[in-house]
Image (cartoon, rainbow, N blue to C red; front, side, top):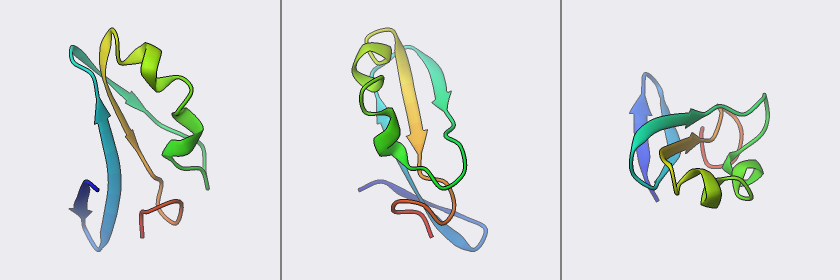
Length: 60
């Protein structure tokens, strides 16, 4: 499970595919699971980066 330390929190993120980076930013209180239907198609063309917002999913 990929995590990165950002200031005082541990942030969960996922990277899928190759190519030009595409950062997926979800609204408040949502996590990466909301992107799971779009990620397979987007990752065919881009390097897709998704993360859990603070206080949502696996992020502190």
